[in-house]
Length: 145
Image (cartoon, rainbow, N blue to C red; front, side, top):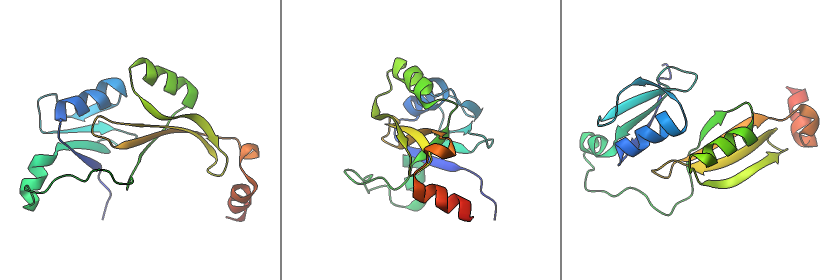
């Protein structure tokens, strides 16, 4: 087996296409507005894709079912950036609403901020913290590897 991509099933294809291509600035490797499928380079060519959810529902035979609502996240798209604070400001200038402001997560060894795409998918931007800013448990775990 070989990992190919993460495919988000979306209702509003064009809004999501704009979000990933223009707002986040990911390079489009396939697709265009008005389409049904598009992929974006996330360090892997075509590593992130969007696809109309109605088309997948027809393929699976569950078109009559609704998408989940009011539930805890089961996945997050994680994007490494050079500076969480700079990226946070640039995305806020594009009217992206953040769930969390930039903060150090010493137990994770990173600085993070969180937001959602137009379909409600959770995204995290992060940059690594220097090891001397990690909490003791994380530093000990890293040193034992």
